[in-house]
Length: 198
Image 1 (tube, rainbow, N blue to C red):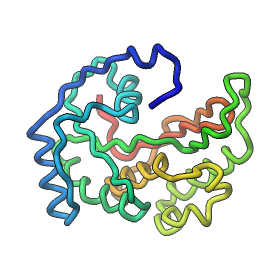
Image 2 (cartoon, rainbow, N blue to C red):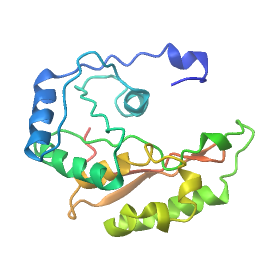
Image 3 (cartoon, rainbow, N blue to C red):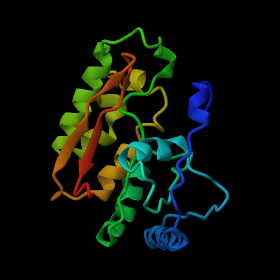
C-alpha cells in the first residue's frame, strides 16, 4: 500500500507459514477445479497482517494467504469459499479480509467523525442480507444494494465477504463483530460464522 503514515511501514507481524497447509490448500482448490499456484516469495499483504495483528497479536498460528484472482467476481469468490470450506474441519480458520465500504476518493481525514448516510445504508443492507443468508441478493449487490457503486467503485475489497460466506454453512450462526466506521466513509463492519476459537 502507499500514502499511509510512516509508522505503518515499520510494523512487523512474524507469523509462521506452513508448507504443509499451503500444499493442502492447493490440493483442496484443485479438487474443486480452481487453478492456483504456490508463491514462496510473496510476503503478507496488509489485508492479512492488519486484522491478524489485532486478532492474534502474538503471531503464534501458521498463516497461509490465498489471493483472489484479478478477475474475481462475487460468484467466483463464493466458489473459492465453498472450495476452502472443508479445511475448517481440520481447525483452519477461513478469514475474508476486506472492507464493508472502500471509497478512498471520499477520504477527508480524521476531522470527519459521523458516518455518511450512504455508508450506513449500504452496510445495513448487506448485514440484513447476510443474516438472512440471501446469497442471490448478495451476489447481485452491485445493482441491488443502495449506493453499492459509491461504497465500492471497484469491488476487490468487498469480495472477501463472499469467500467467508462460501466457507460457512447454513448451520453456522452469524455474529456481527464490529460496526465501526472510520473517517465517516470507511466501514469496517465485520462478521463471523462458526467458532471464533481462542
